[in-house]
Length: 235
Image 1 (spheres, rainbow, N blue to C red):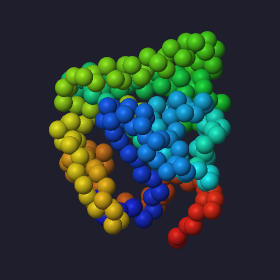
Image 2 (cartoon, rainbow, N blue to C red):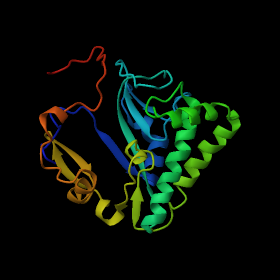
Image 3 (cartoon, one colour):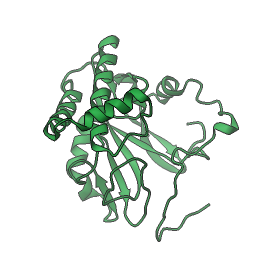
Image 4 (cartoon, helix red, strand yellow):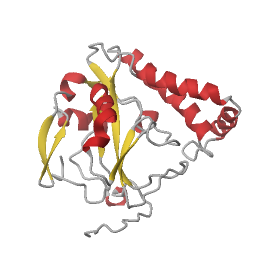
């Protein structure tokens, strides 16, 4: 909204979908995509750990830190499901915190360590998690997905994204009527769909989002080596 397109120093786009649309896309999305785009989720990639999907560009390499090796490691965009959440703010925040903690247990078990949780106490918890039976972890994973969707058919008036990494540090609660229905805007000479009230969303997320950050904070989202394969890169 500030730049009318890509932030010059950033390299990341996230896509959000209401849960019903997200689940529908998981079912039919691959059939709608070009052959060199892979829809990566827990059903299509055996070792995939996340509860949000990705679109991967085949023929490129963009590995993520602290992840098990995937068969598909190309340049990606994330697709996050947005779920209905209780309208009571206290209960809503408890819901988010509960899901985040359960996801941490699963992630610590599945991964070879957890560089994103370096504190001594969480390192100890990670070791304990490794001792849990695998079937317990499988059940927790299934439960997390059911729990996140339990308000799907209720008109709560609030929605959230449980599975953002940002949700691990702050509970983001959005008014559904200010998020939906989506609207079209121009983005780098393309038309894209965004939330109904982007000013509401961006102020909630970033405060004065029209103010440029200090130059020393203008850093890329992902600071890693990228292999573009045979694709042309325009600098």
